[in-house]
Length: 371
Ligand SMILES: *Cc1c(COP(=O)(O)O)cnc(C)c1O
Image 1: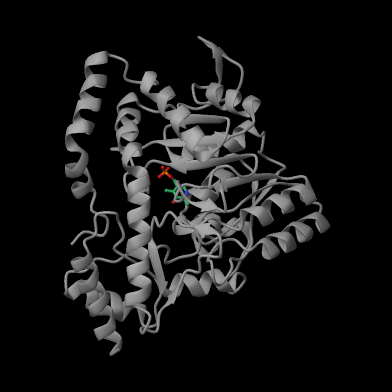
Image 2 (image 1 turned 90 degrees about the vertical axis):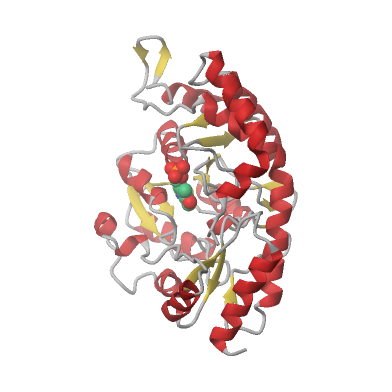
């Protein structure tokens, strides 16, 4: 059994993907070819924003947003410590100050109240907070309406790290359509994954999108003329072609993920696990199905013995890691994130997980807890 079975997905769409990739290989247009623009248009329409810019990874999507917003030395960004390292890494990379605020116990996402406290505290110390960057963790949108209000209240930019949440929604608005801009990732294991690295920026702000288009080609406004300090941040045509194929199947996959999640919730209801709470009106993209498990290490070992793969996202909150020590958050300072890091366990989750396989996982967990 695979944790995320990408080979099964490939076999399901093999003919279409190979035909699309072959067309690119024969076309000679390997970087930013016509498929990139086609993908940008299709995904912008799906997310519900005016502009989308295809870039080289989710990390670069975040980095390009910060650069385009001129967030650098002298600015601070508020974010969550309970996320993949890239979220905080880009803040450090542009030279801005990292401010961590704790997460909500139930949704595991950045708490708007904690973020508000952190902003007020920063203001008292004369720190210039320019952006708040919640992460829609495991595919569950953060409390984006609350962050929009917070951004308005303090005149900040809201930047959603939607790297795990393509397809998710709050009411009738998709993840990626809130705030100033959002970044998603096409890393193969993400809900919409490519066959290599890739990412995309979503925004309603055409000026910002245009600046990101310039920044992704080294900041060149025309050939050999650098207007800004940019990066090599382009999306490959081959990846865009494969993504266009996978995007056709994406709605069906998203629906399958909901069924898999429902079966877990029902099948594991007697076990002493706590689930990530999906608030009323929220749709998770279920990049991961993550539970809080007492005796996590023993459970994980017991499942491994039966050939059931699991993963811990994330065992160390960012503020306790050496790279972010200078942000100044000692152990105990962000207690909810620290507790979650000790308890979370992600179970196999992908659209091709068979009911029989899932039942085997559920039985193994119930047996472990004797329920
Ligand atoms: C995957 C991920 C990223 C980075 O995306 P890459 O495409 O791997 O660079 C950033 N933030 C979060 C929350 C992620 O899960």
